[in-house]
Image (cartoon, rainbow, N blue to C red; front, top):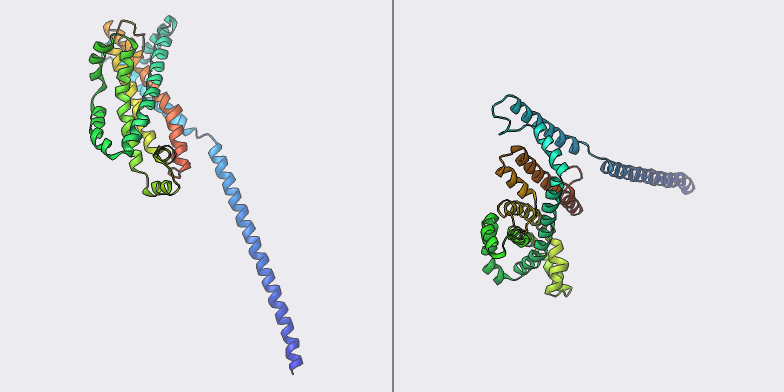
Length: 312
């Protein structure tokens, strides 16, 4: 009897071993299939990211075309005289004239050079001031309201004072640009620092970071999203300030920029020149946003998991 039981139990044990082995084999196969599907999805995601989303190009172009058509229809209906409201073709013809005279290239280059140089100097001045105010509470309480007030103050208000101080020179233009950009950059950096989780500072303290290392290696990298927003706003304010300075401060050793072209068109009552200058000012601002700030902001937010690949 015991022999028969032992004989019958042996196949059962073998069956259990075989079943377990098959289960492990099937489970391993399923794991491999899941791994392959995951790799395929990752590869497909990377391929989708590598593809150009033409809608981001075609939709803005289509919007511009629609606006041009509406503009041309309004002009064709004759509600205003053509010398007061020129059509797109009239402005395009003026573009050609200004290009042939070399004024268009000179105006764009002069204003763009001033804007970029003034903005970069503003960043170099505003960044350490912003870090200092963000790190030292008494200084922030003392100068924070003043910085916010300077940001609200229209930068065009500085033009008369700058002309008196510096005369009709490029220093006047740069001073107005500084006063327009620096407060925005400082406030953007302070706002970014305020959004840093307290754990970051504690980790830096535990690792033995001094105040300088804490500011440059922990605080500034963690505050980059807010800092970048301040930089974008600072560029917008510096570009507006530059145009205001170029329109008002004319003559002397100040070169011929887009604001000067706009003022010249106004003096001559030439609306085609005025519209040409306005469109160029708008185009330069949009180009800087699309070519620099938008890609940098998108990459930064994606690295921090704050923006999905298909959001923008």
